[in-house]
Image 1 (spheres, rainbow, N blue to C red):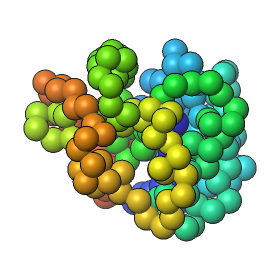
Image 2 (spheres, rainbow, N blue to C red):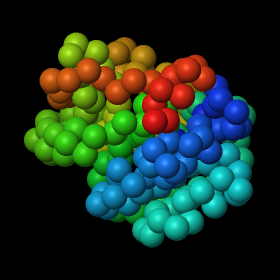
Image 3 (cartoon, rainbow, N blue to C red):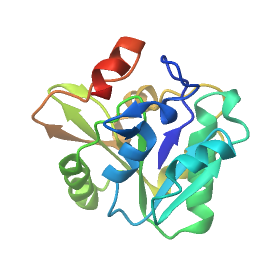
Length: 186
């Protein structure tokens, strides 16, 4: 599940619309997720759904409550996955860190299968990052959240839920400023 409701520090209204490696940031991230059982993208408005029209086998959900805070798109995406799919776990991918590596996804999936814990996260050289892999059994805990939600902080408060997978490279650089966006856009 790609959360694509985040405001941009650049000229576009959202990060989803910003250019990245010759296409929109949203398209670039979605292409990196090809091969997963289901790819769900949560956007602010119908116009943003058009960014990924050319990509097959994805579902776009418009979150009418995106202004409420970061919990809203997570809630709407997990709710859709609960009712419309049989997938057993979902990655939560935020556009702030677009450099999602396929190798990390595979390592997380492999570790999650035998972990016995509902959440699996990468730990890049001693720093937790994303994407976060949430088991279907834990989704109900997030369906009632409201306002701004810091998923990493919640997971730190509940270490019994989490399996960490060590990744031996630096974490993907987040987009926090216009300068970050310009550097990553190349």
